[in-house]
Amino acid sequence: MKIEDLLNSDNISEEFKKNFKIIKTIPGSGFISVLTVLAEMNNFNHFSKPKKLVAFFGIDPSVEESGKYKSDNNKISKRGSSFARRALYFIALASIRKKNNGQLMNPVLKEFYTNKLEKGKKKKVAIVAVMHKLVNYIFAILRNQKAFELREPAVHKNLYLVK
Image (cartoon, rainbow, N blue to C red):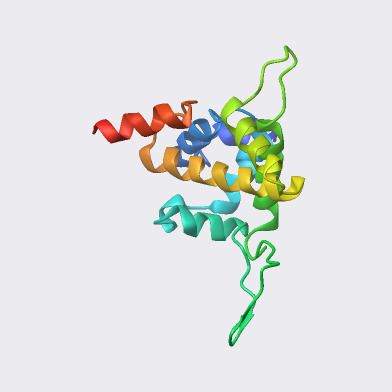
């Protein structure tokens, strides 16, 4: 049985199918990547805050401290699902690339990534920052059950300041 047939069968819940379609609206998200993220996440209702979802993916910073010593060379914790983290990594890479016609896949994330690099961050650190932002996108669209809308940060800020 093909994965597409399984996704369209009665064996998969309607909530899973709906969440799949909603996450698929994020530019750069592929069929297998979205399916992996959702399958690993299992039930979105377990996550009450975006930080919990970030921790689940294992892209939160690890803590190294002992007494008064606090390390400034922290890495991601990697305590979550490695499959989901890898799928999220591929979505992040696809989000910051160009389409075949030369347009950016997601200009907002590409600008965010470029700004991180300009501030002296390494490429992988900038990619993890994009992954973190993608997790926040995923949390917001699943919480609101609305498709992804590409907006500039200033426009988004003004929309929510009016309310």
